[in-house]
Image (cartoon, rainbow, N blue to C red):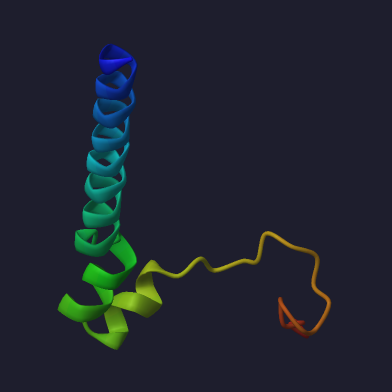
Length: 67
């Protein structure tokens, strides 16, 4: 009985450790978009934006261009 209790307790501690590490990685993560927005100017963001929309022009997501 002692061995089973020890194994369950060590599994619980290991799961808590993994969950803590994952939570810490999510809190400390800084995506590329946030770094680009905080370090660059609006001109750099506009240059980095695609010139055409990958979706069909519906007037809502992709504005229609008359030209």
